[in-house]
Amino acid sequence: MHVASTEEIKEDFFYIVLIETGILLASAANAIYSGDFKTCLVYFLVFSAVFILENQIKKMLLISKNKDIVKKYRIILNEKKMTKRKIVILTVSLILLSSWGIINYISNIYGGITDYLHILVIFIPWYMTIYGVYLGVLIYKKDKCVKTIYSLITRKREKEEIKHIVLLHGNTLIVRISKTENGFENEFIEEVAKHSEDFRYMGMNVAIIRMGKMKMAVAHTGKISALTRSKIIDTLKSIKISYPKEFQNGEFNKGTRMEIEQIIKKHLLS
Image 1 (cartoon, rainbow, N blue to C red):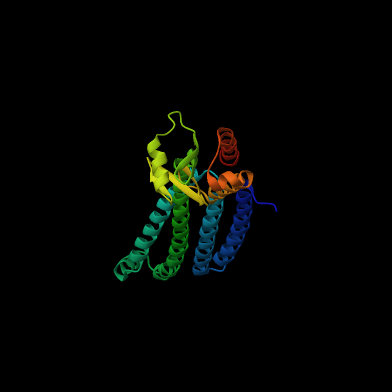
Image 2: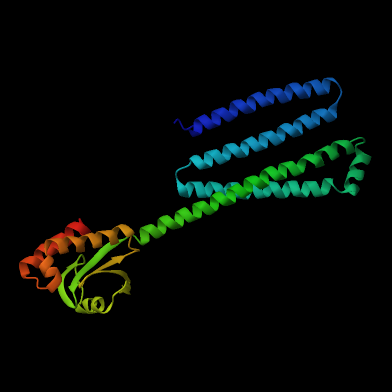
């Protein structure tokens, strides 16, 4: 499926505005020729509303096309600020033009202008509505950008990374693996032996998975994923299948421990 590029969007809207401008000029010229200046003003105000609406739609499409989340956020903030200014200006204009005192004062200077001002007052709320809807969409887009940026920062900060792995049979240490240079102290193994559920240790999350008398603890940064938990379970199953007798009685010799260590590394660290 073909997706329109930013250049195509700009080009399409340019041609649409060009056609509509032609229609506006033709309609306004006919009204002026007939001496109907009020209808000419109505044409101008109607097409102005259409132009404003199309411009906001074009901007929204172009913002959605922007893949740079930070740049998109800045554009939205700028558009939001400009849109609020336009709404305020239109609101002030509506208040002033709705004042009979001001209208009477203007009509005394420019006779016959009252009817034109009444027409303008009718259309201003439509412009305010268009900008108001656009502002609402911008606020929604801004909130989505903030959530996306926060999610990216959090994900980067809390990216899951396995640091330590401990395998126990009851309270007996079978295998321990550390990805840090300093390794880990016996205190960590003692904490693993005491816990039957996930816990926190030295700023890390520790996931505990039990299978029979076997217990595997995986210390990691960030929030552990369901996929990693599934891998831990698969690792325990592989050990159980490969060494069923040892899995039950916990009598692992040195060679078996080294083989189990390779199984763990294959499942969790490769």
